Amino acid sequence: MSGASRSVQLSLSGLTARILPDGFSESGRVLEIGGAEQSHVDPAHPERIFYEYLHRVGAVADAMAPAGEPLSAAHLGAGGLTLPRYLQATRPGSAQVAVEIERELPSLVLDALPLPPGTRLRILNDDARAALPGLAAAAGLAPGEGLDLLVVDIFSGRDAPPHLACEGFYREALEVLGPRGILLVNVGDDAGLSFFAAQATALTDAVAHRGSVRDAAPASGPWTLTDASLLSGRREGNLILAAGPGLGPGARIDPREQAEAWRRAGPHPAAVLDPLETEGFVRSLE
Image 1 (cartoon, rainbow, N blue to C red):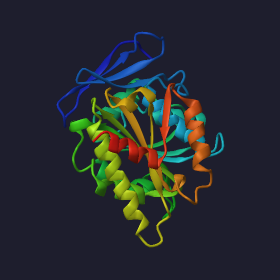
Image 2: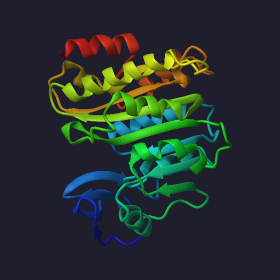
Image 3: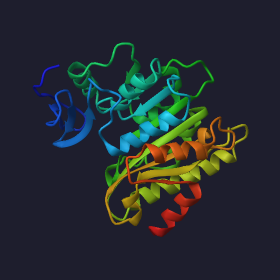
């Protein structure tokens, strides 16, 4: 793996994407798009996650099944493929699919930072919402099977595409989950957290709609995972919303046990809000 930077111009956005040394470790690399850092990857240590919010996502994956058991996972927003690498390192053989709308980006990332041997990952060049119905099949699941994990990492406040930041999108996302499935949404927001509040409300409404659908597995959510300092509402940052059958009444692992594992995993100071606490937090932001 060379320490030199590599770059490509993205045809959809027109921005330049570059892979650069991270500046503080020998093997770490960052994916930069349009001058903004988007992903951090350490191919020598894929089990280590640098970004705070993605560390919390990894903690959810760690707690949702016995250690080492493969999961089926879809990633909306490929970035540097940090989480697919993490799942392969911690749960070898996991069946995964990633969706990226910028067609040049995956090639740049894979050429500069090849995936670990044995990684089962299919990459789709598509719009995230359009790809939803075919995600389970793309991950190699049998007809009728749902995903264990669906990670949405494409939101950033007012820059989020409206057709993805809405109740309808969340309804469709919940439909692709299996009995232990969890939907995780990374929401980056400015101080005041108005975008986060809107997304939490939309996801709450989507879960409520699912409850009215006949034969749909009951889903719970949203839970919130974040740095405790963001609960003041006065700071910008990232918050994770979690919902799905894997946190519902019929979950194989008690959601409270999972939540306690999320807290222990950090990064600290860690805040974990259950659905009622999330609702109260959203009200406090109004």
